[in-house]
Image 1 (tube, one colour):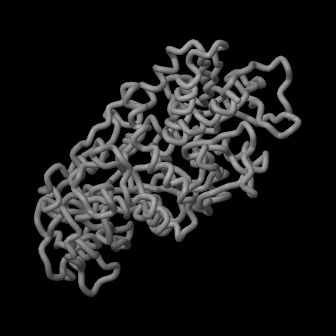
Image 2 (cartoon, rainbow, N blue to C red; image 1 turned 45 degrees about the horizontal axis):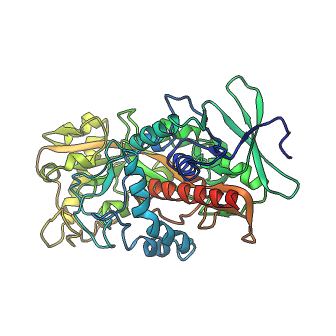
Length: 477
């Protein structure tokens, strides 16, 4: 289907108002500034202006970078290791190469990158456990949405279309993408033409039908980690597949995180769990809470809770965890943990079987192995004779006050998506680029088996810029 002659015409159409889309639109605007014939840019957003930004608006947007704002030097190899060699390492190397310049780009527009206190060891620094605080935009992903969005709003060349749903891509006779059919808030459709289109509207975690199709049974039981991702309906994947695009990433893989069930606050993730234990609804431990640093285990906890624990679990700890300086910074809920002077009292507050909880804690305490407890490193203090083992930080839970948080698994994003090259061009299974079509962010697939974290927003920003720069170069020929 080709675009009719009377369609609204743009030099670039960006679908999505999150990190990838904003980066693409603003990069294109900057690169075409001063053209004799001003470039026209459309940015399409399913949501209202007040709710714009998709997943980006709600995330803390951790950044896996060093103090000098370079990507963790181990990240590309880490992705390769956990993927079993399936991930596109050239793509990962591109993220590594473009990190510093991309962060400078967002800082230029008012996004402040800060290194805040985070009290637990992680592997964001060269692949070895570190206590260096991870970075994030001050104000989280919302800062990216508001600062980059404000820059676009001030540009008369940019047409932001809210409550606009992308339905289908159009192509010219030679297969070049030349626009998109959209549906507006009144239910009517309109054809937009564009010399290039960037798909930047996220994965399919907001579409239960697609989640069930790809991820499997009971996908409907996965709550969304934030309201904005309800608009991630798989539009990019659906439209690209209609044109014969290739895919990448593990389609039954998701990034799920353990979140507090007592609150409706978005992104209420429990990161600081390593020094306690998890029990399920039957008051049985089910996970090695200390097998690695939190960043390498938190999504595995989430996936296990969803897949095998009926979406019900409880994190239990004691005064030794409370004594860790800044520990509350790693519990992102707006509701403090339940606290009690006895396990029986804690069980009552959590609404669980007291006898079962006391038994689980007693069995764990009795399995204490040798060594000194040290929450700042992989201390090697493990349990002996119980299953599952706890490989580090296995200190008894025997000191009041006891604390607990009820958790479930929430889906953050999907692994499977569109395959692109390192310029952000959508490619076919043969590797040929589809002319005029680009994709960036979570609409594109990358991860297999695990997500080495704090790179989702970063890669979105990077490949939004790269797609825009390639589109500008093509239009200058």
